[in-house]
Image 1 (tube, rainbow, N blue to C red):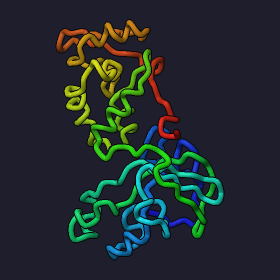
Image 2 (cartoon, one colour):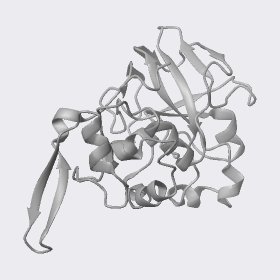
Image 3 (cartoon, rainbow, N blue to C red):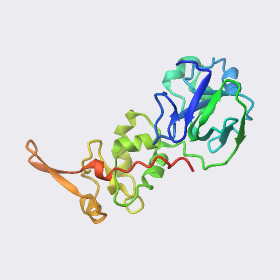
Length: 241
């Protein structure tokens, strides 16, 4: 981590030059309350947070709140950052930091912030995102429009989880109702159709998506895929309003 006096926030992107900046992600920024880490004897920066704030009441520092800085920069808080093994050495138990690990957010207005910047907080300005990854999966895929597709990679970005969740996507798909959610618009990480999604090829073609076939000499089967550049859905505004 590098300590900076000034951060440049860019709408729909995150912090300029930050590794976690991602237009599709609901976890562009991690903010912690100084009061929370002080109580736990954790030094600023040890939780790998981007911003430390002070003076916010605990009941107002919640997912769904809006932080607006004097420069005009604004951050929507989305969901709590889950305690993980990476910070286990800092606390007696991960339970002790539950709800105090910080809250993730997205930049909804650009601007510069610096040490000592004044800000205002408005609680419940937006719907909070679910703390449950599967619920965030559903919330993301329901937005995929007709005639567009996404791959597993776009899904985990849109859920705000790391690459280890790629293994969970097939399980999520199998337990999701195809009648209620457009699971047929989801492709694997290489843009191939998914064998256990019923009628996927027919449904995509009905929506105007061209499905191509590729012969596999080893299995002697044709694998269907989509030319992703023509149909990929990446809406960078889904968490801005």
